[in-house]
Image 1 (cartoon, rainbow, N blue to C red):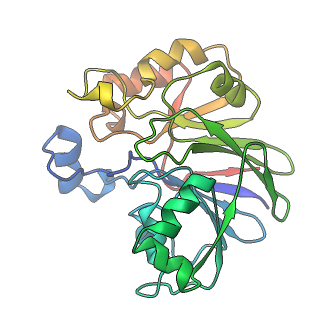
Image 2 (cartoon, rainbow, N blue to C red):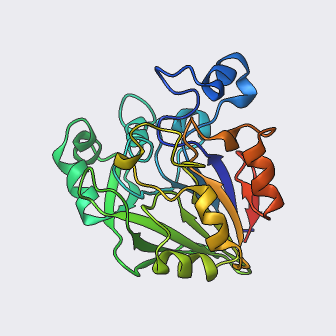
Length: 264
């Protein structure tokens, strides 16, 4: 059986967000059921395969992954690798798939470099259109447009099982024609839902993401099952009773849910 489990749905810094007293963060501090981990998924096939190594990895996984697929170098997607090191799991040559630029960042910067030097991880480059065959599943990396704070490139991943396909596209700058084609050509898509609208953050221009509100019309004619992930702590979609959540669901879309699984 090939399946995907959602491990986290929050933007890089999770919910609650340090230094914030917004309603979502305050509610999460008071109610553990409203805590949200950074965006990640796990593929179950002939092993356990992690997509994005988040700062919440020790809550998201009980077992050491058999491989890790990284999307890019931002806070919510990379630092979890450190828990594979000597101070924690002390893993043995776990394959870590990433872009060449991200591999350079890992090799050249302590403490990440120690994971390579001490044999905890084995960096493997995965480029445009390249695929990895697992048991019954295959994983294909696809470059997407995203803000390059660290110029490593950003990847989305298409995962094909025996019966269905899923796209994991947690971070993009905008819904380009290429991004829309990726979404159309799979059965299920987990798509960047960082912001509901552009008035959530006073520095939103420096954090480019397509707003969910603007994406709904663009995606309305797409037959793919679309779920939004990577929600910023300011996003009203985090509140299941919000008007935004009602609007989203009436339009035929969903927010990804931690623990939800998809059989492929």
